[in-house]
Image (cartoon, rainbow, N blue to C red):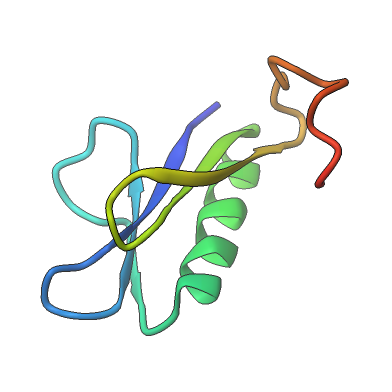
Length: 79
């Protein structure tokens, strides 16, 4: 199980980073493509959380990738 973050790259584009990793797992031109990569990587590792950060660096959305354990299943009605 692995958690991933989608963060803005200071040189442009968006990075997909695993928790506590120093380097990005992938780099994309768009946030949407980086989010797809993060969900694919998380699913391949047994599920987990994907956190999407905004331009300000704050988490703006998160999604549990199956078979990950959603900590608040009744509240997460967006996905």
